[in-house]
Length: 123
Image 1 (spheres, rainbow, N blue to C red):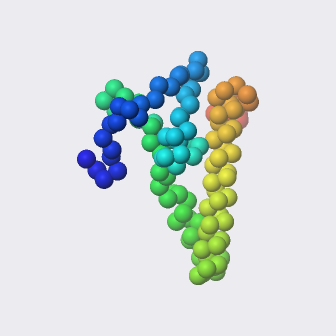
Image 2: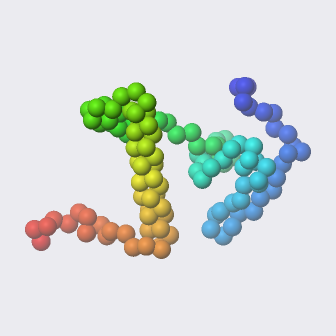
Image 3: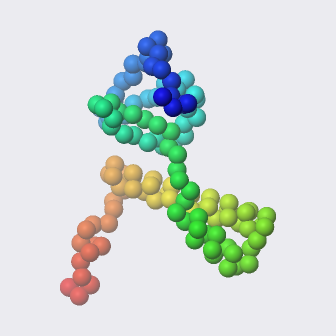
């Protein structure tokens, strides 16, 4: 058993409801104890749905951001500050794209149609 794994305590069991939209509410105690945010990793393991705090790997954009900032002449503390600023801008842009995708998926917003994206301009 790894250092973070705890033995299952049957007294710490919670029954939660699943809405018609397949949504659940995580008990506040668990939410706080795990330091959860807006996203979780969800996997199916041995017939159980397992939810874990999402641990994002460093942005795949990190290397490109650093290369660009170094090329612009940033270094030292100024490089670190600009990197943090640019990384936050990328995060905000990704969050906006995910929100838009959710709105399209839920029908709140129309998305592009397949033929709009892939039909030839020659027609």
